[in-house]
Image (cartoon, rainbow over the protein chains, first blue to last red):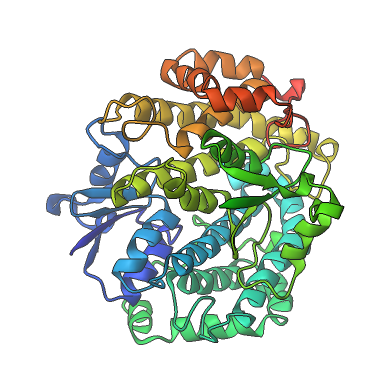
Length: 242
Length: 242
């Protein structure tokens, strides 16, 4: 099956969690907003799904995935769908739900990371909410980042199947997402993340190992991966990295 | 099966979305943090799961559900699990995923509702972030509330099965959650929600119909439902209701 991923073309954002799963599995997919309009892609193709009155299951926002005639939205839901098809989740119901639970906790973490630079809302520029961003970042870096990372480190350490990732005997989509979060935190908060990650050796290994996997290594070298930048979830503002 | 729900005892919060599903289905469950300690409940029983090193799939935060030997966390994940068992979701994979996608969009909405009163972080008191709360609320009420409600109104109107709710031919857990969100918005923002909901007749009917269902009516009359209050997600601060 050829998948169509729809997401903003200029950022990694939430779409990157889906891209990493598709790349790791060697799936056949098109990143539609980056496909030329004359080939059926571009922003117009994406907005048709968001505004269209004729879509049976309209997504609220990107990313969404077209798989045959189905349109599936919400990052964690897309990964739940892909997990079984791309062999990136356990086969048992309990394993599937536990992987999904971790993905949803990663999603909560991502909201808090995003809100460090946009605590007052996404409709205002960063510069319009700088003072609030500083206060929110202080809270995040002092309390929340450690709480989340400590939790995931504990999950890695306690994987009863002794696999390399958080669930079962092999990597799941949640591990790929976790590696992406660590990379993002290192980009956004090089100083503050350094100290906390020194206490999380398993998460550091996870990041190294995931991005060293042959297909992901090729993806990173391909030029297709958008670089981290200050329009995405993870932004580097030195004044917030306390 | 007797379910054990673990959630903060003094608020509706995210636990209420699970409670409504259990109540609507007439499920046998105990709200463990409200059960006396000598009967195995209370806050101690809850914190054992959050801090315990011996839990195979430790939840990051309440709510979580114990079902036999399984412990399942994340509100939307609990509802995904319960949906099939309590007949509150379609049986097809496509129907299950679409219901879950709506629940995840409701979860995003809830984060934004919560952040109107706590934009700088949950570790600070409301009074310490009043100015930021006013700015965030202004953005939320001017743009985001309408965007979310307009989306869900459209989904209700376009249900191809012409059922009473958002998916298929009967109510799902996502409809129960949606009704709870409307009730919460009416509590938190009586003025601002009034104008927007006047444009959303299907959502208003959904709220009325869901809370008029026999089992939910009994639940509301039982005294077991915690009242809305200013420790929960939906808080009534008149200075934010612009």
